[in-house]
Image (cartoon, rainbow, N blue to C red; front, top):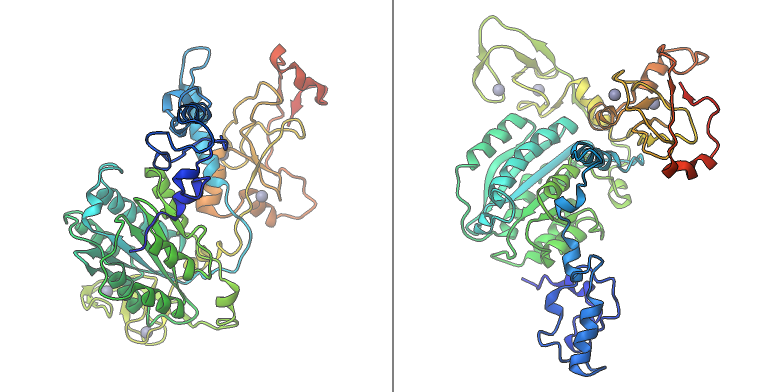
Length: 491
Ligand SMILES: [Zn+2]
Ligand SMILES: [Zn+2]
Ligand SMILES: [Zn+2]
Ligand SMILES: [Zn+2]
């Protein structure tokens, strides 16, 4: 295993040379203590004592303590009581902040591979018993993996997923490459009872993933998502050759590290993504960050120019089977079990239990039209809504989507809690904004306009005309220099 320290060198002004430390760079935060000489006596530029004093003063953080203490955000510092001594306002603000973070997404329309084949490689080695993530790394990973499988098939209904585990230096197949989330979740539930043991073998797991993705046709994407808790890999051969063969097979890998950055994982994510490791290798900071990194993977990868040339203008055969209802149970082609009802393959007329799937008899991809529509939204993502600026435009009293009353605002400079679609200009509450972007993938305002003649005025729904009284207190009187509407803000 190569050393994994290439990121800590970036923080060290002296390039890791302890004798040449220069503390003049006092941005200070998260200086690694291991870069400092323990005695503080090796500063060439001054006497040892003076050097230490200078170093100490430069290391002072903004809060008066040491700079490295600044990186800890204590929850009791962030949450401040309001005038009434209540925390409700502060907590609501934090919740809204987290929602805003979720809806700021890259909405650039890109060519993406929407028929995905992803192998999820999980670390079942003894390093997963660490309790730095609660309750421990292993249990948290299984919980998140179950959530991930549900979300993955919700966002990518015509895709397939397989699960591989690394344990005792071997790769174990947890779940075959398949399009049925229930089976994957069932297999993951069974893994809860297992105890993580031994060391992981990255090479064995990657070779197994390569084998599982071998038969995947060229119009589908081949992806590997590795969750790696250990800092080592015990491999039977040369892992660099395995990475080269992954590159040759056009398999793209994303890595989520649970402990620290590992050089071989960085190499894996960089080389398999045409030299880009950004967004393809992340080390988790805490539990929510782990979940964020995992859920990012539910968005299909953009097709790179190099990969696109291969699959240009390719027609894909797909079957849209019809549902049947039977009075007597019959054998299904997928599990060879007696089941009542199901779907008939339009080409070979064999019965299958659930969609989407690949026909076990004629290998035709079988989906429903709704699956195709749901996958399609990744190609034309809904543009982010922008927060309404009360100084520039009138604000709505009710959310266009849920019709609930929006919070009153007291000054023009305070946040308006209203988010407007850039196309139809309708205003929404933050919950509807999140719902539109994460679940619906459409704007209710634009959709309702699409079926009406264009000359009809916007908004279409009759809404009560309401005047908001604006109280400008002395603190915000400076804001009154901006041109305010004469009679308050009306809708
Ligand atoms: Zn079946
Ligand atoms: Zn068939
Ligand atoms: Zn709403
Ligand atoms: Zn709209």
